[in-house]
Image (cartoon, rainbow, N blue to C red):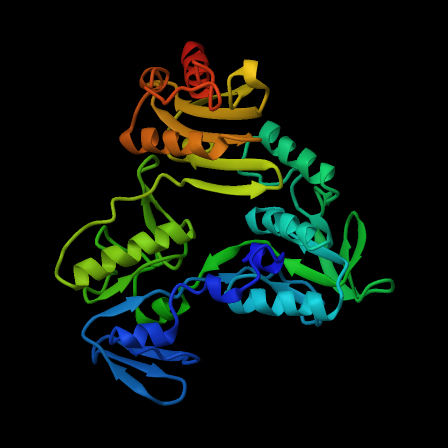
Length: 398
């Protein structure tokens, strides 16, 4: 959606996987603009706000997330928005066009805030990011987040770190002003990009078990605590294969897989969703940013004793030029088992994290990772890839 707002994707229809009409061609009745008021598991009925009742034999909860909205004044002013759905994206793009917007203030320096800064820059709109932490994307190691900050600054994005937004009011040189403990910042639109929360309110009211994450608890077949009710997507939990804990990671690829598993089980072709390793990525102007597995803090919470190492190198053979990449690996001190990986670079970061995601899925240790058979060619890596070098360096330190 950020790429649609930034006009990289110009046709909103390209973001629609399937229209209601296409669903109906397959015999699937789609009720849009229909709000569910309640669910009666004993009777097997779903009641809508308009009074209609739909009986069911099997029910699937796929309520997604809701944007986290802070408690501060001024959020009801026109032009203060959050981005969660395609409808949100259409409204934001329309507002920016109609107001001939030149400046946007974003509260939050995570995925959405960073992706939006690139998208807005492509549309000729300057961005100020207000973030509670000193560096953007605080899941990444500070030295890798510093690379992101330098890229933002090189592209003309103003990043205000270590700042707390305190409210929004009408501006003087622009329609809106964001008040913070580190100064005030004006813009034509204020984007709330502080994060999302699983939308489990309906599930909770129905009596479904809610996990410690605040998302719907499910088993490996996507069943909830009520046998004929399933849940899939951002509203429910996933099993993390590294931490061995149930987590909530709201990403579209996970939602797609869970939906297919739920459908297979409902349709009588049983299968399980065997979990995730938390692989994720995003682009920030000329940088690829990716991560998988556990951070050091998450590893400690899961009962491991983590050790980490950050390696620097090139995404290609140095004789062909330098494409800087940084790779952080985290492993368990006692076993050498790989626990997590993070990468930021001008090229090759996502591909290397994808390879390390497979290693995390398989439970490999540093000795195995350090001698992985990777596809070598000078345009794509040195003979000893940065994966090899990082794993061997971390292994020597244990």
